Every structure is written in structure tokens, then in C-alpha cells.
Amino acid sequence: MPESEKREINVQIIVGESSEKVSTPGIADSKMNIVNPSLVFGIPAVPTTMSFAATILTSGIDLSREHVVSFKVIGIKGETLSEINGQLHALARPISAGYNFSINFRNIIFEKEGDYKIEFRLDNATDPTASQSFTILV
Image 1 (tube, rainbow, N blue to C red):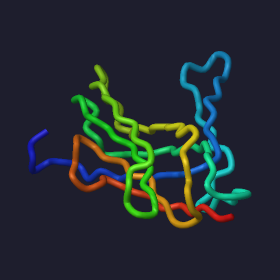
Image 2: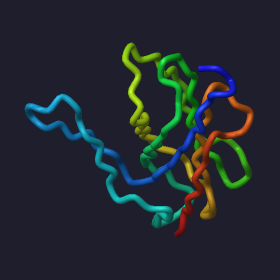
Image 3: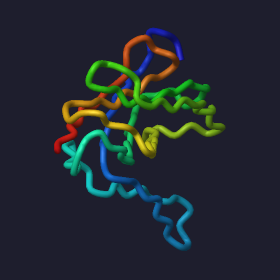
């Protein structure tokens, strides 16, 4: 696709307790359920570890070519608490409906209550393609 025809990339990040892949017999595509989506997580004490999921909904990514993707949990002071990197391989028959990612972050250490952030980066971008804040409360 020529530079002048680049599509705008739209991203929505949903944070929840977990995500579950649900398969329906006889149907090729599985569905993803987001369990207890929330922007605020109440925990009994800090410091603590917590596992949670982030579902990243996208549209406008050119799926006819490979991409590098990065998902980060950012702490109160801007430090990286967890990072997951990977490759999004080109699709032989690109879909135009968009592409979704479900990431399970396990045993992330939260030292204090406050505002944290999930960041999504595409193709090693310096700035996040999208981010979503969430709060840890005691």
C-alpha cells in the first residue's frame, strides 16, 4: 500500500480479570470472552502480585505484511513492570475486519496503589500506538 494510502490504525484496550477462548462445536472461529472488565482493581494489600488480562482490539493494520508487536505494563513511575513482544505474521488472505490480541499478564508485582498503564506498540514505534490507564486500590 503506498504511503499516501495508509489507513488510520484504531486501537481499543480493555483490561479485565482474565480472558477466555470459547469454542463452539461446528463453528471454525472461536470467540474471546473478557471476564470482569474494569479500570479499577481492588486488592487487599500492597505490595502484592496480581494476574490480569488485556484485550487489544485493532483495525487498520496492514495484515498483508509482518509486524512486530509489543505489550507493556507501565508502573507509577513510568518503569516497565512486564513486557511481551512478538511477531504478527502476514496473512495469506488478509482480513479487513481488524485483528484482536488477548494477553494474559501473570504475577505482576504492584508495590503501591495508584495509576498504572498498558501500552501497545506496533513495529517498534518510539511512542505507544495506544495505551490504557487502570488503577490499583487497596
